[in-house]
Length: 276
Image 1 (cartoon, rainbow, N blue to C red):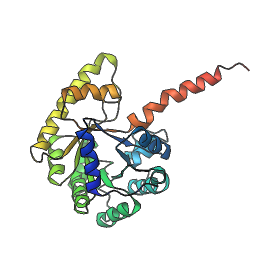
Image 2 (cartoon, one colour):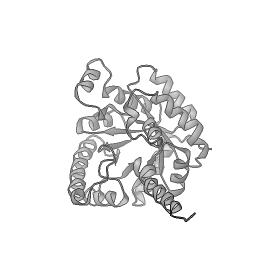
Image 3 (cartoon, rainbow, N blue to C red):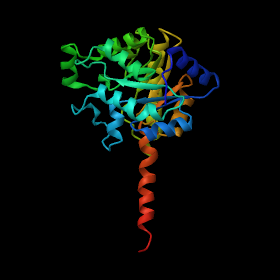
Image 4 (tube, one colour):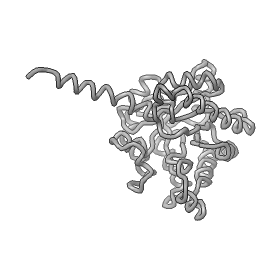
């Protein structure tokens, strides 16, 4: 059964990995079996959130639709499916910080009691744009509520990490005390061979700007990324070569969807080739 780690314990574990000269890997999972084998493979952190649950139901990215209670889903996933199979890896809760139906003080205490060691602002309004985003901001249900949630979690001595998409969001989160910045490059979409090099280069340039903005405020914040064209280990290797300050990677589809899609299909195809 998994246990709750203190913020200091998590930070010490991550510092030890960077001192060894290896990238921190966080697996964002929606099932117990994904969590179990991510830990067996050496994942440093395990995260879970409502989007991961829907992803493993076969519906990528629908976690932003009004079809479920994101904060209740993550509690249920942690308590019933993921913590029971973990042995020694911290579990991070994806918290919807703009949730108007919950008192965040009470909810974060519940997260800690359940056994989560930290929080991540997911789902995040950083990925919502257009008129809908402007409307949410106007009525006070924008990204700032996620910043406030991270600041509150930090005050409660939980490990904190934050999805950010631009320099302004990064600055807000670092000022709020976040432990790790996770630059969200969009939904994981493996690049085609013809455009892979340019997409990887563009991702690297974006990371440099975000990381520079973060480190101008605090030099102890961990720097990570997620998604976009960074889908496989070779993609992360390519980005890391141009952005040496990159310390961490959060893999969602990279950890549990892409590794099984083709093998499942090919295994079934092999069975179907057996003569009757």
